[in-house]
Each structure stands twice: as structure tokens, then as C-alpha cells.
Length: 89
Image (cartoon, rainbow, N blue to C red):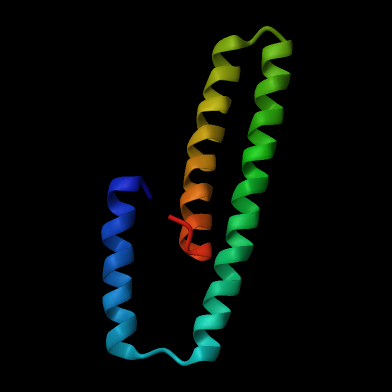
């Protein structure tokens, strides 16, 4: 999901949550799953950067740049999610 579609979806989910009044245990489970997903996304960034470095060392500069671009995009998403979870603006 791209950034332009992400924030409207968050607002829609907030409205839904206020209408449904999820149980605290459900909210905690959802938060735990988001943290786990964030961890996996951050791991993806590490893998993509390692592959990029490997491709760069092999002389495949265009491919290395493509992997690096994917890594940077994933890193930006991960940072946004972490800010939402921690309340940091």
C-alpha cells in the first residue's frame, strides 16, 4: 500500500474502531501483530540492503540500485509504522 492510500485507510480504521469499540484484549492482540509485522518489515530492509551490496560488488549496479530503492521504500514505511505505534511525531 502506498503512502497516499495509507493515511486515509488509517482514518477509516479509526472510525470503525470507535463504532465497534473493540475489546482491550483485541486491541492488544492487534498491536502485538503490528509490532511483529514491523519487525519483519525491518528485517526485509536488512536483507534488501545486503542483496544490494552483493549486487554492487558483483558489478550489477542497476540491479543493486533497484534493491536499494526497495529497501529505502520499506524503511520509510517501517519508520512511519514505528512512529504510529510509539506516538512519536
